Amino acid sequence: MGDLLALAERGGLSLRTPYGTVTRAPQGNQQGRTSTIDHFWVSQDLDTTYKGLENRQRSDHYPQILHISQASEASIPQAKPTQYTGWAWKKMDKIRTANEAELIPEALGGY
Image 1: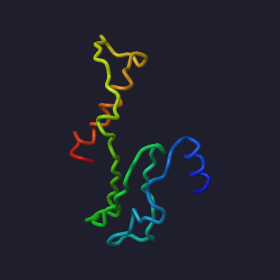
Image 2: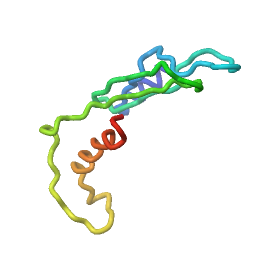
Image 3: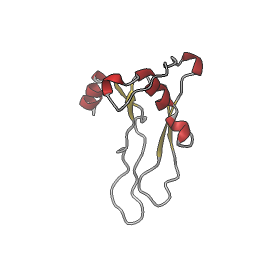
Image 4: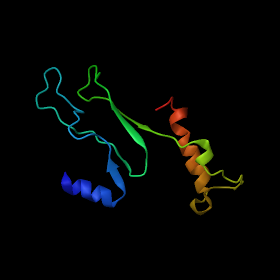
């Protein structure tokens, strides 16, 4: 695991699943031991809060939630309105794309 962590950190990623968190536990007739097999890897500069849920109902996996804090509107650069015909990666408005990406959790119901 140490080699994987070092490689991820060199790539700008950070493990946000707390060490020792149980994300899978056998249930019913299943055999085996509890383990951490579900991991959250995120960009190191993201402000996140890990939330694991204790209620797994009939699954052997515990639900995992990672809240990503959104920047205040004052700190988000405003994109210039532009109208392009067709799609081209080189013409993508990176600021507008970043702003719209921040709205995705709200559109999905707050996750």
